[in-house]
Length: 236
Ligand code: C5P
Image (tube, rainbow, N blue to C red):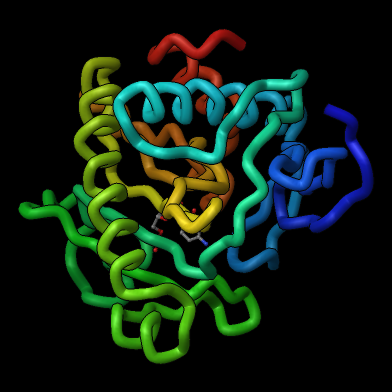
């Protein structure tokens, strides 16, 4: 597949067209951002670690029956994925209270959530990704209601699969964000799954092994991502 021009540059990844309209190339950069792009730094090796981490997780989910956009790893920083029409909605599942849930509702960080909490957010940095519900999504035409149900179901299926994967490696999947798109009319998991878009704590010590290390200036960000990768068997 031949790489052509840059289609879109996000905060951490760039998308390139190819000679086949059905596929694009995702290029994972070292840029790391937080707080809607207010804090940005380059973290050496991050693009490569997240590209390989995402490939491993997407293949794992795909083998378990979750439709994903992932096709194959191309090189250290790039993957070939399906060219989807992205749905501008973030799906978040929380197994343990942390982050914005604690700020919004005043609950204690670390509180176990049973059943897990599901939230939708609008993907819009200028509006600081406001929380929305199914009615907003349908009324404003961001997705059809049957596709919203599919996104929700798939996000919960991912929770079962990945909570176990990480638990078996001594970690707690605290929360995570997924994004979906439409490919030839079907809802398909897109974007990435990496420690940039989830919270992972060591099950014993509760040490943070995710992007909160960057948000909170704790240091050792990429070392933590690499530790998670090593524990679940991602070849780096
Ligand atoms: O900030 P908040 O607590 O709502 O984040 C919930 C989860 O979604 C976290 O794992 C966070 O990393 C992820 N997230 C994300 N991208 C966003 C917002 C949240 O990956 N724009």
